[in-house]
Length: 308
Image (cartoon, rainbow, N blue to C red; front, side, top):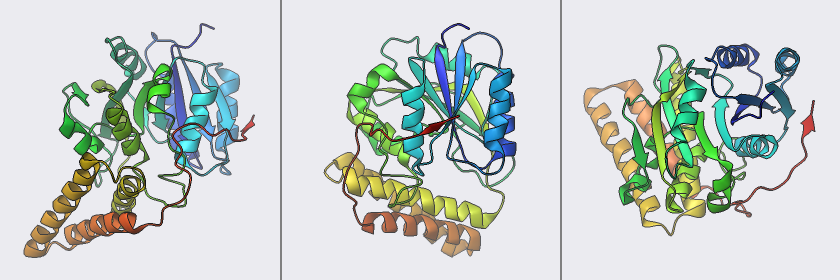
C-alpha cells in the first residue's frame, strides 16, 4: 500500500447506519489520490465499533481508534496525532462524500501557500437548512480584515482539511470549547477558522470538495441546534478573543441580524421564525454570560485512547 497523501478523520458516536453510508461513499470515490480513513469513535454502543472493524479487515485504508473523551476537538486532535499523511481532512459520520471529494481536496492544496481548505456542503435531505455551504465559487478567506468578522461563513467542521506543517503556526484545536465540553455549544470549527485568519493564514473555500449532510426535519431540533451553535460562538469570543475588535464586531453583527429578523417575525406573526430567532439570541447571551473555565488550550494535550 502506498503512503497516504491525505488522512481522512471521521468523528463518530452511536450513528452506525449513517457511518456505514459514510464509509461506503469513501470507498466509492474515484481512484486517484491515495488516502486513509481514521475513524475516531467515542466508544459507541450501537455496533459502530464492530462495523468499522469489519470494514478495516476488508480494506487496509480504514483504521479505528477509540477516544472516549467527549470534547469534539479532542477527538479531532487525536485523529491528527495518529494520522499518517501530511494533510488531514475532517468529516462527520453522517456525511456522504462526492466521488471526486478527495481528489478535489488534494488539488486545492497544490496552490502556493495553501494550508487550510474548506469545502461545499449541500443538504442530503429536505429539512431546515443548517451547516450548509452551497456557493459554487472558489474564494480565499482571510485576505481582508472583514473576513474575520464573518468567519463562520467560510466553512464548517464537517468538511475541512489542514496541512500538519501549519499546526506550529495556528496551534491544535482547543479541547476546552465547543461540543462535548463543560461550557457547551458549537462553534469549535468557527473558532479555529477565526484563529487561523488571526495568525495570518488564508483559508481556501473549494466548491469541488463536496459533501452532503443531513438537515434537521423537526423544528424543535432545528431550534435547539441554532441555540447550541450561537452559544458556542459567543463562548469562544468571550473566553479567548474579547480583546479583538473583529471578534466583538462578529458578536454584534450576529445579535443585530437575529434581532432584525426577530422583529420581522413579530410583524408577520411567524411563530416558528420568532422561536428560532429567540433561540439564537438566547444562545448568544447565554454564551456571553457563561462562566469561564481555566486552561485555554492552543496546543495538543496528550490523552489516553484505546486502539482496537
